[in-house]
Length: 206
Image 1 (spheres, rainbow, N blue to C red):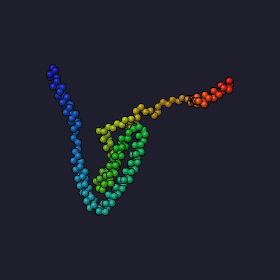
Image 2: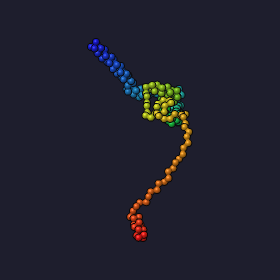
Image 3: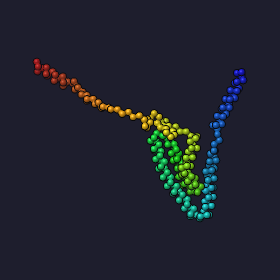
Image 4: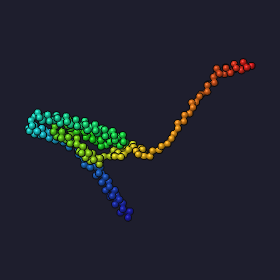
């Protein structure tokens, strides 16, 4: 019986090990593909859109449209950035880590970079990132795979500092009295001058 059970246990252990390795070795997007899309595919799309739109409205209106999208995007990013910073500060005052606000700030930085970059395709991607529903959807997808825990705080809504007081708790009303102790007086040091005065008094008495 023992000889039969040992291979089964070893087989189960190997199966669990292989499953664990499969989970760790999930296929990810290679760096070469990311570089290919960033430096080859995106510029080709931008050139095609520039030629197409320039043929419709002309060269100078096309350049003016690119500049206007960059200006409008910078104004919107500045307004939304102030709002996000205010929300993040309020959540930090409550003792909650501003995870979603931090992700929103990162999206605004990426959107600003895309809007400043000349091109219609990058402007469209930056404009999409400026939409709050899109950022919220991206945050929910990222939050499923990432968990950040900071010592002293609890992530998520309603989290606070561990051991902290809860608002609306019991309040104890009591009377108190401040007791002040009288100042302590230090005795004068007994030195040679005091001893001499005592001797003079003894001589006069004699």
